[in-house]
Length: 328
Ligand code: 8YV
Image 1 (cartoon, helix red, strand yellow):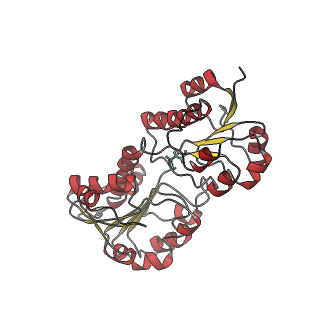
Image 2 (image 1 turned 90 degrees about the vertical axis):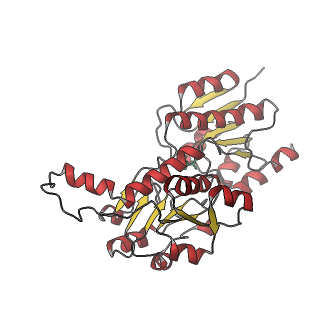
Image 3 (image 1 turned 180 degrees about the horizontal axis):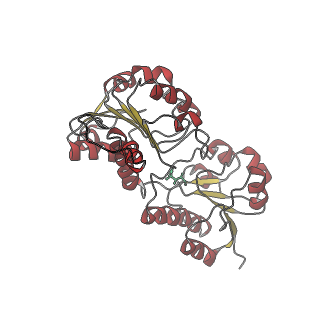
């Protein structure tokens, strides 16, 4: 029997490729060469399935150039690289990779928060540069985590994981804002209090962003929102580039309108706004919140599970537009 053919758009674990090769004809970009959109389309043409990693854009242009395509499985929980409406209209199933990365990503959100509030990288650079020749009472004095007010914008699974770490591990007061309020049971579990967005911005000592990116959430944090925050506040973005207006943030950090920021995601990444590189009070990491080997392997296997289930005639594990399945 003919095996369905799929494209694996970026380098992933060889054992996951081997799993896929048992059921599919696989073209895998194991060199991890970054393809332009035109090159991506060239490779995708004639393929029935795609294994994507959260950056390859699947939109009307790609879909019309690749009419054989039936499913795109993202190895990421975020799926703003997918135009879901266009995919649904074209009858192409979209799947993502939620849950398996929740705790790892929440760990990282907390790590970035602590590194930022306690000025970890800034002080390490100082030490490495040989500038440390004496102790002083205020040297790299930062902000406390324990007992502080933790604000969370976007209270999905990862936001809830961060809330629990803050409340249960560090005795923080947790407030959150979300499109919809959590039910009372979940609020109690997270020890989190629902507030309006303005109160969140004004009250949080540390504000962590964990909301999905969409045109509606573009620049959720810009100059106006930054001006509402405490001058002592810390801002952490582990959500997506574009949620924060990076240019406005660089100005706010330079002018000390907020104390510090920790950023794992950037507008236009892997490019980083050069102004952010010139301010010392920011911790910058290259989109690694989910990066532990067990978690990345689980994410890759989940994307593979979705492809295998779909072509095996079974229910995909984490579909995003199941309406497509009903039509088939
Ligand atoms: C991914 C992420 O590593 O899952 C997500 O949405 O942002 C990260 O965990 C990234 O999207 C690349 O796949």
